[in-house]
Image (cartoon, rainbow, N blue to C red; front, side, top):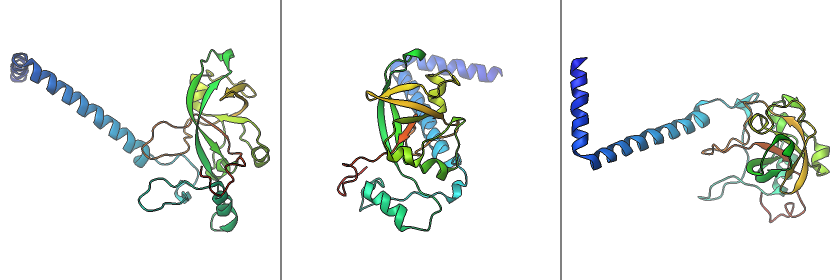
Length: 220
């Protein structure tokens, strides 16, 4: 123990003699620890942790990948083609990333905030086999009729609505358009699962494709 103490005191004296070098060493160590932590978080969240969905080993992602381009985006027309032309899958859904300015819930003391979200076809929830812990999810009729409904994440329910069980039916404003909260998803629910992204969606709204998006030249 005394040998270790003497070694530590010697190291401190040496660092004091070269303060610039010492700061560089400390900064390098901090940067290395931070980078290692970030990398481990990504690996754990993307590769090691199993997908929190029913029959996760049977789920696949479909899309188009051309040349060296990244991503697997498809057009709205292709979404319908996949659904109608394939009988290899028992269920199929589509999603599109979105960001909204959330406001209109002043009863909970929330300030306007930009939040990550996703637009989902109504078949996504039953395909993933996940039920909300409160309320319900939207159905195909509501999606096709462009109903302004929202299902929120557990994280958003906790941080902004203080786990209020009466949040269902509350009106929120997304990009200056009123939506009704109809469901709260479980804590483990994260979708879409995007490789390399820790900024997960905090709420989900019906995909409700517009006429512009249904143009064959348009992409989601």
